[in-house]
Length: 260
Ligand code: MG
Image (cartoon, rainbow, N blue to C red; front, side):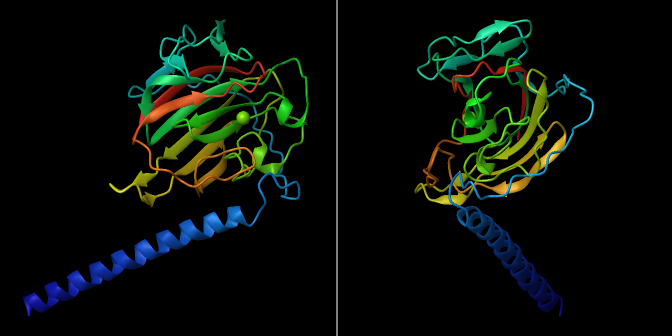
């Protein structure tokens, strides 16, 4: 009798496991399909509503177990994409993109994580659309969360501030005016590949922009790119985090990360 009950329990757990797994993969494929329904950078894709985030409480202190990647003093934990010293400007507790010096990346690699990063678009407004305060936070150097000045500045939905670039527009436009400090809090789950390089689990992100949730567990279709949506290619479990030089003097400060 005991054996029969044990067997039944085992069978039920097995089926429950299958059901949960099927639900998971249905969610993954339906989200990926929802992205592909839109052309990349589709001008007809609806723009998210504007939300005023309220008064700022920045900077947010790093919790005790966080690794501080930039404390306002120097770029000792950063380098350029060729492994040379990072050339961005550091002053008054922030770093600033120096046009044409290239994107910078952490010397260390990171995978799944919680990342806090504060940024400010240039106070002096110049350019429009994608040309105003453009930069980007690239998780693993491959998956971009867009940094852009979208305060009273329109662009295509999947390229707005807080967009998973080319894939998911943010749920809300929570931009503060140019020159004001704002923040992203990102929960990133790295993709998993098997030993043959086949994708096992795609990457996903949950993001808060100025404490407002703008993505809840969205499933990425692959690395982000301009005008295309490339497929996943197997990569290491940890890769450097990078910040984009898109030619605009965007500022960053108080960057900390918690590894999962
Ligand atoms: Mg960008």
